[in-house]
Image 1 (cartoon, rainbow, N blue to C red):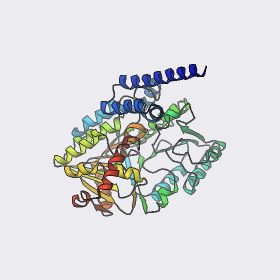
Image 2: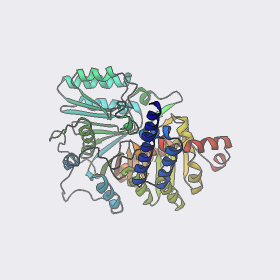
Image 3: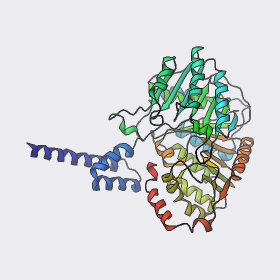
Image 4: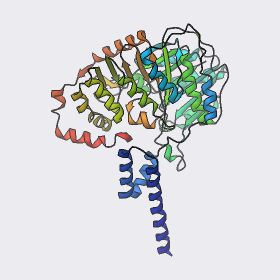
Length: 471
């Protein structure tokens, strides 16, 4: 009997491996990604099945939200076409069309954008905006800690809920894994609607543990919105052991807030299966500037990797400048090639990274990409006072890309992210000035220093690079 069970188990196990291999082959992925998965499954089938189940599934053909619900929510973003609205710069119209066709990220006109370059100013601005709320408050964060900063925000939300303001919170279940459940339960007891995004429940949702919501969005009454790189935790305000926490966040006023609202309500509908709609969530908004922006959500569901495609396309069309701030640089071949091609073409390409991030492994993997970038002419600066967590892309004199996405595989392939593409010369000049100020806190990485680093460090970097898609 035991022998029969062993044979039966072996047959089922073999068929499972063969089935997964067949699925991988028929998904028509990039061969460079298909072959490693097949080798892992064949050479280490037990471990391979677990790793593939957690990290390897292709979700591009799955729907995160029904097409009917997405279309209904997106229809509220459509603007009328008045003759006096500003014209999109001709050289950016193909990029704008890409965002519209791939993700229905329609152009929104006349928004005022206020940047915050440190945690204290951002959290105080958010609390001040919350205090003015009359109708609703929508918050979405990857990390919402139950520390001093989180409790300050919680108390402000509870106070507004007691006034009758609708408060909805989406937090990521993995990002908040260390937060006590009582923290969120206490808010629910006060009438606040709190939901976990892609709740990880073993074993049913274990396959979703790799696909997390990294967005940071706040919308107050549909009039004011916040988006950027800062979560809700003390370290974003107080810094880290080795220095300051340098980050960038943005306040939006005007029609651009509707783009953030649409992203939040799409995620809310997908999480709760309940559609929130009505004129109170998309109020009529004035125009403050001549700027134009598009709010671009990205994620693992759906055919297109819009954030990666949009960044790479914008970089490839740059005429004289590409300046980047990112905490991690773990690029796909498409993005890496776009940056090197731009530098070889004489474009001023600058990449600013933290000298030390919050992960030694990620640092090693990121550094493995710097050799070829430097040979191509990319100028690399390392931020020294602390951890640079800012996500910023400045192209030429009239385009800034900002939001939650890092320049790495996880943000482009696995996470739910949101970036804003802002076409505005005045705003671009302001952000370029902030970038140049950050350069004063950096040291330039020279070829003489970099190419003479120890061989052991090079080997460690090359080894960690293998794991770049999982970091």
